[in-house]
Image 1 (tube, rainbow, N blue to C red):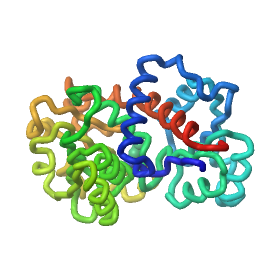
Image 2 (tube, helix red, strand yellow):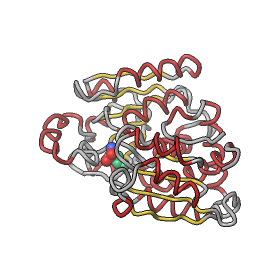
Image 3 (cartoon, helix red, strand yellow):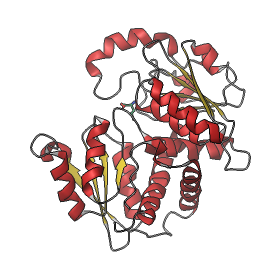
Length: 314
Ligand code: NVA
């Protein structure tokens, strides 16, 4: 069976914890494990802009002993010049794994259905599960008293809850047993079925996910406050309307002061200072955004190694 990582809940709670343990171990010894030795090729494709994702996958794949092959999504014309299924069949014959950043989630699902090798979501319109693994690793480092348990940690996510980061927080937080509160305007909360899935997961892990339109209520008592751009890639034509809708959800110093005194601030980047976050917060002493950016590499190495190990015949 081939295992892919298309959305956060493709891992069980136990598997998520195992991947995070492995990420911490790989971080402690970055040049030790070589599960991609050969080198095995990992195809990486970016249909949307990227800095952290491209850099961290390329470096991480190399550290695992593999070869990162960059496939230019525009030149390949996936879904236009050739069907997603045909691209999947071709790349699956050249590479041991496929990492793809694209738009609709169903494109990624089609790739996974036809590739015959593990496929990893490097961000879609709906989910950003690799970022969440990096974020959870970062929270473990800063907040977990035993360095491992995320259970009961309270997270406020502010801004566009209906974007990939909001959805992924609801699912990944539930898997980790966290209490996630989305502070987003009406019409920008994660979809109802995402909350339903989180509740299902939370029944076993103790995790909860909820939504409020009141940013102060979301942040009050939080251990971790997360925000993200108000204008996700692909939504640029809605920029003016979004700036107006989200203006009261800015992570200012005043709003951050409602969180726990030792709360940390997170942002997956790129950040727009003065919009979704104040410079005083993101560049301040309780910001962990550079750890988050670094942890993309360690977390992604762990998920690649995990999927390879779990996939028979890849
Ligand atoms: N929600 C953002 C995340 C960027 C890493 C976007 O999709 O543009």
